[in-house]
Every structure is written in structure tokens, then in C-alpha cells.
Length: 312
Image 1 (cartoon, helix red, strand yellow):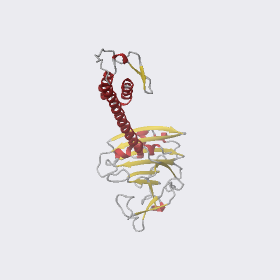
Image 2 (cartoon, rainbow, N blue to C red):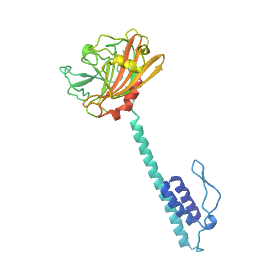
Image 3 (spheres, rainbow, N blue to C red):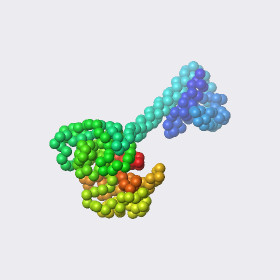
Image 4 (cartoon, helix red, strand yellow):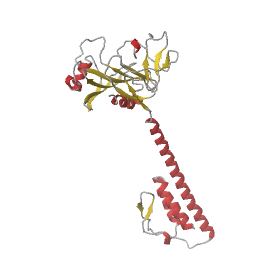
């Protein structure tokens, strides 16, 4: 009947409608009920069991009881309920869209890259005649690169390690001694163009040795802590390093201490953002470094942090 229809509309409104619309339609629905139907008894609604008490303000009510008025009230009550349901549906769809967006932003499939084992994805190598080509590496350029299977690591360090990265990171192979770079100073190199920008996002693993130095104070050490705190180690590891901002931390996992760094240097046309994890194990230094440019840093940052922090 008309009371039941109005009550259903009221309940639907309170459950589904947005707050501003709820106040207006709630008053409209309440005026549809005869004075006798309004009560101060609590009405429970929705899964939360929240309590709402109906207003007891007196409202004049006509004694007219014709079928025309009843029909009008019933229709209006149905309209209120339908409107509430529609707004509730709209809110739910919007929430679903937000959840879908959040899911897609966090749904990268991570795979494990382990030194000394086959790569979990196809590797990228330069085609014949292209290995000496200089400049920014674009692994998506099929005129220069091709896909192949390969094994990872073991080129500059024999210390075993693993890291987890999204499967769209491609290991480079086929350069110096079959390794991941022409100069032969890297043990693993992963590249991706998935974040856009002016250059690829890169992850490299190395033993910290470079052609411009001969003294490696970490050789023979059992822990990175023997080289000082994170600030002191950074000066040992990269004496000429100049950065605009840096954040440092340390963490011990399974008896191994890792020093972590987030570095930024103001520069153009350069991978000026670095995320670093470094550890000394059995006398060897092993570092994992994530690099991005200013153009793709904001998109790549959460992924690089997760990748570098997974380094073991």
C-alpha cells in the first residue's frame, strides 16, 4: 500500500543515496506517510545496523483518502526509492572504477631473476653489426635488438643473488664475454620502456668495480658495516658522488646487512634518480641499482623501490 511503498523508498534512500540528496529526499519521503505511521521507535537498516530515529515534528495531514491521492503518493514514493537506488548504483560503479584503476596500478606480475639460472623471460640482444652501437638503448627497437633465451649473472661476481621485477623488464645479453654490457662491468642489466619518458628505466647489478679505481676496500670484509655507517660507506663506494638529495637506511635480513639509498641529482638528459641496495657477502660487494630519469621517475618509483628492496 502507500505506506509500505513510502517506507521502502525511505529505506532505499537511507541505504544508497549520497548524503546531500539523502537529506532532501528523506524529508520528501517522510511527508508521504500519514502522521500515525511516523514513530519514535528506532528503525534498523543496512548491514551496519545503524539507528535512525524519525522526526516527530507535527505535519498537517489532509483527511482526503481518495484513490487518486493514494496513487499519487504511491508513485511519488516509488520515484524516491528509484532515485535513491540509481544514485546508489552510480556511487557503486564509481567505486568499482576506482578499485579497478588501483588494481591495474598494482597488478604487475613480478618474476624472480636469479644469477646463474635461466632468465624467467626472453632476453634482449643486439643483432649482428649492432653491438658496438652507442647511445640510449631502446629494447623495443626491433631493427637493432632481437629476443633470445639466456642465463643470468656470473660475469663479474660469483656471489649468488636474486631480485624480483615485473616481467616486462628485459635482461640484456650477448655483449662483452656474453654479458649484459659492452664494457663488461655489469653482472645483470634489465631494461624497460614501459614507463615512457626520454630513456628506459634500468636495473643493474655489479660488484662495484670500475676502470677508474684500483682500491676496493670491501674486498675480504665479512659485512658492509665494517666499512662504516651508510653515509660513510657511500663515500667509500662513490668518492666523487655529488647529489642534490639523498635518503639512507639499513636493514639486516638473514644475517646480511643491506645499505639502501635514494639519490637525486639535478640534471637534464640523464638518469638522475637512483635507488640502491648494497651488501658485502663473503668478502664481495654486490649492488643492485635502479635508474630512472626525471621524465619517468614518478611512474617508475614504486616499482623500482620494490625491485631494489627485493634484492638478496
